[in-house]
Image (cartoon, rainbow, N blue to C red):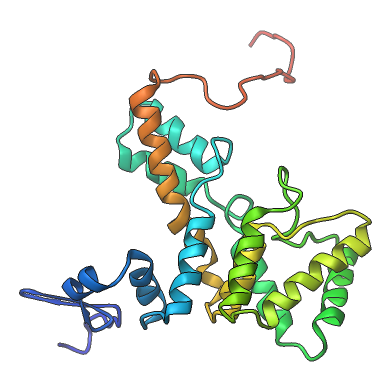
Length: 254
């Protein structure tokens, strides 16, 4: 291999050989789950039994949340317009951004930065909330338009405790929830994005993989929505809120 060749530590291929992080793919197909293999690709090593169970729960938690999210509307609109399935999936993924699907990355970044600071989690959470309040910044991963208590958060934290993953980040996350309520006078529950951010941080994942976790999980749900739209609905139907009020200039000549 020449010095100018790309270097990768992920996959080694050759005639009759496909190795993922050094493991033959046929052995992974025989002995490991899809979630375990994704963990291997992202982390570089196969997960322990506890890591495997926790990772599986993370992937399941965001698989779908109904028709209203932008990624699902984008995907269903695309297939309704007559595009192929792969284009509809791409439309859905491209609808994921900092506002929809970005909170895992954002919250994990904040938690990982603040967890490195000296001090008790309760004190750090109060400082963080005060700092964000003074700058009029919103803490991502908290509050939900529908759930007063996110059932996915409860299950993720329950598993994290049972599997011994509760560490500095989850503790900080829970203290932030309490500090936000004390500061604002209203409950802003940890949502699934905030919970995932805390758990993956305690599992040692880089915050920059945050959107990747959401995309991995949500793409399966999007494909189901795309196929349902494709096979059960008429093309180019009205999707989402189509109410519109014109507020531009009155009619005028050129």
